[in-house]
Length: 565
Image 1 (cartoon, rainbow, N blue to C red):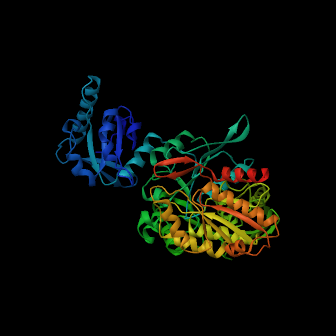
Image 2: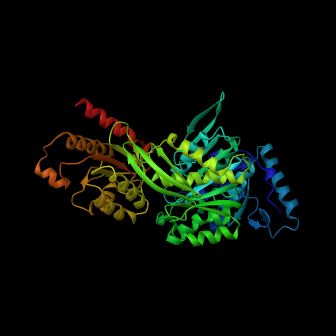
Image 3: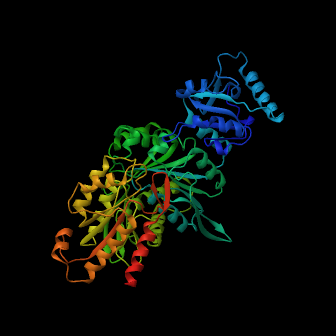
């Protein structure tokens, strides 16, 4: 028997959001077990509770007056379309029996009798939540692009939104972008394309299925959607059943091993986007430097998914040929399907030009998937014209106006390495402020410290988001990489110290020998400060507290203090 969604008002994995006649999905999460909230959900009106099979013994301990039957099960059925079916070996006429039990529960509510619910076990809890969330929020934008990869997801999504806006005279420039910067929309207001934004309720880069499909449904009228598909989000089926035309794979480096346990599991989580979620006959846009490229190709080929490659190789469909810095401007050369274009960019980070290559691929894929009255050659010329208008992405090597101070969100070894190498092309010396988050990927801390020691000239180790780990132990791990590192636990003070040091070094010809020895530098060359790890974030997480904090605000305050001295 197919699950009868028509009986119910909606679905949620948050007991506080349950409405009368609702479905509660009791997810066993990393920090909390949804099973603990079953009674709360029922008291609020849930008449169906789905729980993971692993919690079956716990269900037996629930008060019997909550439970109608313990014999129901939901299974996922895969045919031409995915469906979810209810089974109960004790029922001869399952459909009639289930309908009668639902009616009895509803009658009880009308007569103010103590609430009851049908508890249903399943091994596909997260998939059901995604399927049900889409059922109750069924509308989506017409053109959907999912971006996965260790780094670059946020930049690609946000640059794509800018590019599509700049091409509004060619196609509909309205869009929505979902990811670590929250939700950003570009829509027509009184005839003008206008930006607005708001934070995600869940504070997850890829929101849970419920929030994800609610957002898509609310903004379905915006033609284009770009969203970040994290490995954890993919592994937890949060975006299953979305109508995805294009998938982008930006890069791949070891990360989130604390969650996925192995490198293979982490890779396979990302591979789901191409092996299961992109529409058949869709498009995969792949950075051709990714390991296991052939495996990705095989997966796409099996589902008739077209591949567009980008990168620095000569056989890339969209190739980054060269970048040259001229002051604040980058001169960039691309080879786009055999057509060379030279243009400029005001984005400071040279590594962002590879992300721009991915966005060019997205635009060309849309061109090829739809009938537009323009040749590819003219389209490429149009791209060359709009690239100078594209701004840098907030918190991604963002340069503070008028100062050689940068704020960057990079919190992986590869991101830090790429950023430091990029700055080294322009600056002689780098003062780095960084830390590592608690309860996350402990194995990468030493690698990040070694990268800091190799590529930065002066390193201040501070707190990132220590969460439930003792902050001083995290700092100790990083400090063990070099005796020249300085420890400043308070992030605000660490940022202030870095900016003062840069000012002193740039403006004074004399430094004490002791300070020179500690800094391992000579008083020559152009300095910059890099504040790494948090970027766009508006808070610092210490234990269970989320304390308002912004690296941008800390930098601006430090600069103001310096000017007042």
